[in-house]
Length: 223
Image 1 (spheres, rainbow, N blue to C red):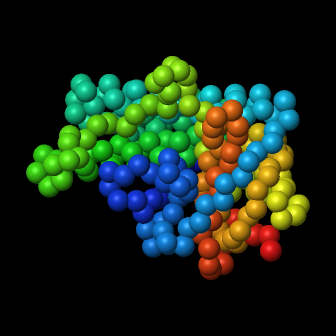
Image 2: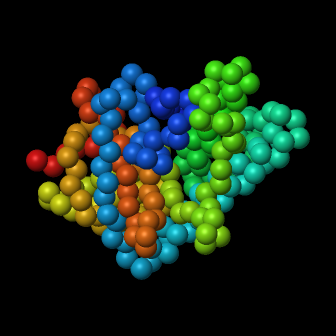
């Protein structure tokens, strides 16, 4: 499908992807070489409003895609990956660009992990404490009833401009944003899918970096 870049993860089946713990997109062969930089974003007022619109669209894409697949699963026991990918990618790529593909790929991975776990469960091969697996959930705060705000950015659609050892700018190509950040980039290497999250009233960027080797799309550490 046009615009999609495979979401790869070396996580064990059934574990939440790196996005929710230590955000990143490591491959299985280089999982141990992935480091994640956490940067505090300091957007201006207009940048803050734009980030919210993008993050809200990202969450809506995830939730609508996931709901459509959940309905299919409950009705047939299967998911039409190709059909739902096509429908929702082209619904949201006008707002998210190719980054819509990163959301879809992550959802693909979550559903495939669920089906693998379900197969093991039915074969009696899961530890008893795990119980019956559940389908992927929604990006929504159950207490507040609001969508969880996060943005996924493909590794070639952003770059960092360090100014010194503790600040710089994050450039998001598809939205014309150059946002100031505070934080130290400790490693150099190939950058993975960027995760931007709104946490406790503040914005943070999580940059996964595969250290070692020579790659395109490189983040340079500050020494």
